[in-house]
Amino acid sequence: MGNQLNQVGELELVSDIVAKDYRTAIVFWKYDIDFCCGGRLPLEDACLAKAVNLQTVKDELERVIHQGSVTNTLKYKEWNLDFLMDYIIHVHHAYLKTIIPLFHVRIEEFVAKHQKNYGYLPELLDIFRKLEMETWPHLSQEEEITFPYIRQMEYAYNNKEAYAGLLVRTLSKPVEEVIKHNHSLMTKFLSRIRETTANYTAPENACITHKTIYALLHEIDSNLSQHLYLENDILLPKAIAMENELLLQVG
Image (spheres, rainbow, N blue to C red):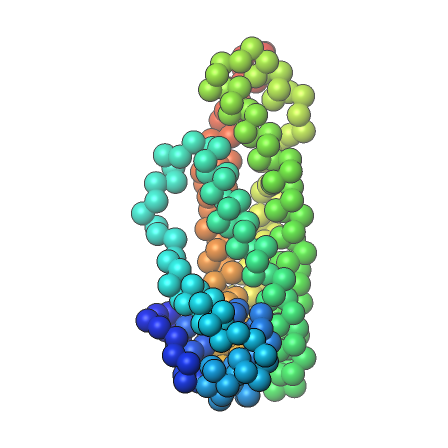
């Protein structure tokens, strides 16, 4: 499935739009427009049938199509921890909070309709539910506890505050154990999803919804994998090194 479409045409079939760029499925799901078995309608007719504004849908489709992917050339390791945490929250956390609730509904509908033909789908749904259940407390724990703690510690460290060492001793720790436990579970579930989907390879006779479910699962995997990399390989090592240095100051 391609990932580039210059402009959405009013007479284009809904199914063709999704076939060219799977990300457009998110917009069609939002407005309950069928792009699979009933998706042979032109966009204009599909919007009319659902009583939704054609221009609004077109604008949202084109925003999705033209949004850029995150470049691998960003110099994450050079960022201070405060900026890196903001990036994680506003890019990775925001993405998961948007896509997962919508995807949750659609994958359940898809599995209910297709599990008789594809026996592995109930297992796939079960793994996704477990991943989802692990994701929400992970995001909350980071935004409400871990990241605020690291922000305080980095500020005290950079400004050579007298209380810096005591701060590290008095707050709940260690950061490493809390985050890495969650990360190990999320990594395990992602690995099982890859195995169950043959690394996101849809069957030859799969319908467009089947292919879209796999493509979006792959996108969720990529987003989470980069998210975990930023925390495991950059954020945590720097925060732990800072913690250790501050603990040495108080003996």
